[in-house]
Length: 127
Ligand SMILES: [Zn+2]
Image 1 (spheres, rainbow, N blue to C red):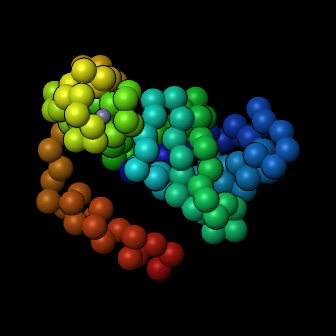
Image 2 (cartoon, rainbow, N blue to C red):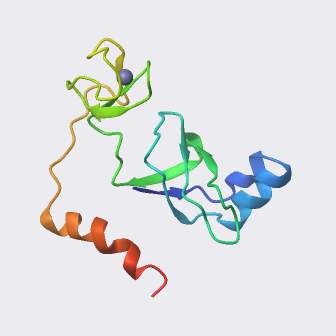
């Protein structure tokens, strides 16, 4: 999953955070999908910018590629995400605390090509 940042969105912030955003202004960045949120996303580490990832607000995003949140729900109790309609696999609360990221969305089946790209994509970065 990756996102494209809005151009000049750093101008809404100040200090260190603004400087970091400026250095990736308008660029595509990879998202850490281990913990997903509706209103914000955490990037993977970006060499030269952040070793731990950067919090990006959804309002500063223009495009999302391979959005892992579509058709999925997150457990408010333990934070695990699963396909909408399925019980939580992280706690024993079943569907009691499941909340859809984007209600009514359905995840499209990935094509074989997309699967291959997601598996091998990282290997070709920077080539
Ligand atoms: Zn849970």
